[in-house]
Length: 341
Image 1 (cartoon, helix red, strand yellow):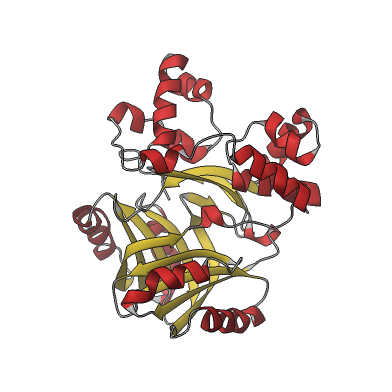
Image 2 (cartoon, helix red, strand yellow):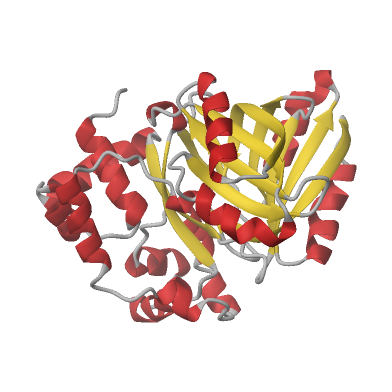
């Protein structure tokens, strides 16, 4: 399967507004709404693209950690499978470095990280060592990453749509949700475009009740919605993660500069031997050096201590992936707290 320019354009529109209605998307792309709906269903059913909701990972509300794992070679597949089955371990990647596996973890608290994740890691046969870096500031996340396919006129039309509604997520960030509302989160993890009617049918609740609950969830700031694309179809098949040191007083300045690099999928301040993590999607291994030069030019004084290229992504924001990077359809989420990330 190959993705057309029209497919990629639709994905970029949904990257900007993952829950955008087809009639509004039609205004941007100049294609009939029913055509877009059919196109999206083809992309989604093939695993080439999907919309998910995931915990935001804001360290003011929850704990986000990056964990490096070492394992015995002959047990690595078993270790990987067991790690991917842990709901709080939201991303699992195989690394081409002295670190065998790289994990992204989200829990409600440091205590929960220790009890639900740390204890599980210690009990996995073949897992020999792990080291954690805890996020203290999340500067950029992958929901901001774009394909850069749309024309200037399409981008202008997209911006116009964005000006029509308030940013309720920022306005209401930090709002606490009752358990009845958290019940919606696993459904949004599986399908970030799920409607109140869809969820109501699954939960056996009245659609109007679920609509009110959904509105509050959307405004809470607890979740980020994003349209994902199978990396093999993105023109950026290489994932590289850097561990860097930035002077403590310059993290915000560094984050602003790094945000101007279009390849960036994540940047965060962390604890540990280094204090800054950067993740990019690149077109080739040769671009690793190009990216490092760009980082050094944009962030004077940055010390790039280590770069790690990923060999394979087993699980991304809760979604289990096939060998070809397409979505398998299986989603491992934390039913007690909400959607996996």
